[in-house]
Length: 381
Image (cartoon, rainbow, N blue to C red; front, side, top):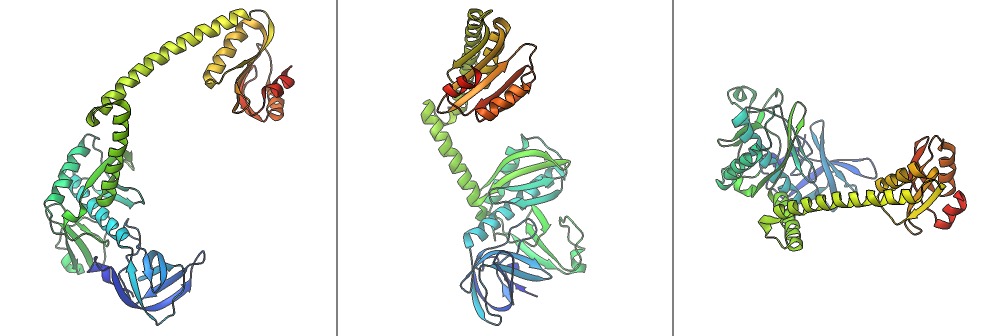
């Protein structure tokens, strides 16, 4: 079995080992085993490590039958002594986020008694599933408590207990654990059975940011970030807010109020424009009363506006009404109606002839075509 250096020294960035196995893997990769390794294999919600091993790239690290499997892009000779170097930024990111997850879980468990029933560290965010519900408003308080624990810079203790000794320790675990148990302790916050890698002190996490909460699995799922990820997220949010602040000539902490004001103004203007548009459509329909079949070409407008104009004219013209809105370069939205008619075959032929798509009820259809005005006129006239 592979000796796992990371169990006792999560800060080992480089090590030497003997290659004990090398087999072809999937998609032109190789599966290499060593007598010892500092590469953490995927497990417990934490992704596997990556880096370089004996000159070949370690793409991922997994475990199988007690061995740590290094997925590489090239082979290594069995029996050779090699040097392994971790992608440290990736590893430390995992340590910050895994430790941050323990702290948040501990804070919530301490207040509500809810259990962590699922943990996943994705490429962008971390999620935790709990077996109970609490409101979004609680996140701000949980975040303050979690970050206060970082500022206290508490030591993170890792202890391995044999089976009998583990029975005397109160720790969190998602399942019954046979044999020895590796327990990670954040003093006064969380005590949990865990195989992952962690920081030595809470201050190294730097920052915890809770992003969202939603119902999941009969409880709630929290989305969060820690460390470098949290800093990069906050930096990106501040840059976005700066751009909004400049665009609206608003102070950074007043952008929300400015956006709401603009939103209300836009709603008023939209309501007014819709009213004016409806009046214009009714006037146009009155001009075409009783003329029979009508073909109209309009400037580009929304599909809903195309529909409303077609309906208004259809009610007055006494024949088939076809409205096409757009231009030859971008194509046209269409709405076609015929009171008491059946346009299904006609629409199919139109779409085939004019490179279009659309449909609807037998007597009223909507869609779009990629054709020129002259081609549309040639088909309809």
